Image 1 (cartoon, rainbow, N blue to C red):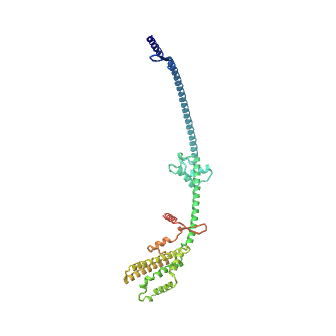
Image 2 (image 1 turned 120 degrees about the horizontal axis):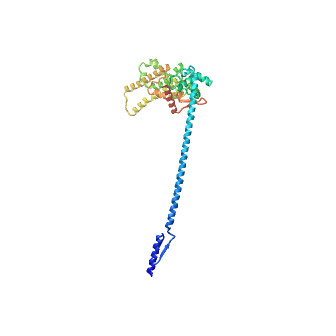
Image 3 (image 1 turned 180 degrees about the vertical axis):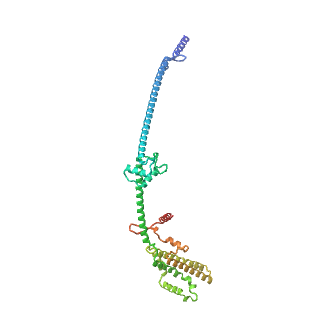
Length: 395
C-alpha cells in the first residue's frame, strides 16, 4: 500500500512539472508550489506585450529622428538663402559705389584723358569739399593712393570722395600733432638754452679777458716758492747773486716765509677760490693745477726721507743732480703753464696732473638750478649720462 501511494505521488509530480510547476519531494512527503514559478502561458504573453512595446518605441524614435533631420535641412536652407541675399546686397552696394566712384572720377578728370593729375585732384577736392588744400597735402594723397607710382590716378586707383575726405582728416590730425610736438620741443629747447646760458653766467666759462690771463699765472707762485728748496744748488752757485732772476726769487721767498704758516694759508686760499664759479675758468683751472703741483713736490722729499731712514748715505753729486732735475722740471712746467695761460689756453698737457684737474673742474653738466636760481649739484651717475648724451649728439 505504501509503495502504491509513493508511485502515485511521483506520477502526479511528473504531470505537474510538465505543466510548469515545481515539486519538492522527500522520502515521506512532497511539497508543491505553484506560486513561485510562472506558467509557460504567462511568459509567452509577456514576451508578446514586450515585443509590441519595442515596436511602438522604435517606430516613435524613427519618427522623431526624421522630424529633427527635416528641421535641420530647413534651417540650412534658410541660412543658405540669407547668405545669398547678403551677397546680393553686397554686390549691389559695391556696384553702386563703383558707379559713384566712376562718376566722381569723370568729374575730376577735367581734360578727359583717363587719369587724374595732382592739379585735377586738388581742384576737384576743393570744389567738392569747399575748402582750400595745400599742395603738400594733395601730394600726400596722391602718394597714398597712386599704386602704379606714375604720378596720376587711374579709375581703378580712384577710391571715392568719402575716402579722400577721411584721409585728409587723418592727415590734418597728424599735422596738428606734429605741430604741437614741434611747439613743445621748441619750448623745451628755449628753456634749456636759457638754463644753459644761466649756467654759463654762473659758472663763468667765457673766454678769459687779459686781466684773467694775468691772474691765472699768479697761482703758480705757490708751488714755485715751495719748490725753491730743490734749487738750492743752482741758486747758490757762484755768481748767482748777480742774476736778476735769482734776486727776484730771493725777495719773493723772503716775503713768503715772513708770513706765518704761509704754505697752509696759500693752500686753503687757492682751494677755497677754486670753488667760486664766478671766477673765470682759466683762473680756477690754474689754481687747481697749482695745488696739484705743490702736492707733487711732496713725493721727492718723502722718497729722500725713506732713503735716509735706511741709513744709506747718498753721494753729494747724486743729491745735487736729483735736486737740480726736480727744480728744472718744476721751472719747465711753470714756464709752460705761464705761456699757455697768457695765450688764453688752459695748460692741460701735464701728464697725470692735468687729467686729475680736469676731472675735478666743475662744468655746466654737473649742476642744475632750482626754482630760486640756486646751484644744485647732480649725482655722479647723472653727470655721466649727460656727458654720454652730449657725445652722442655731437656724433
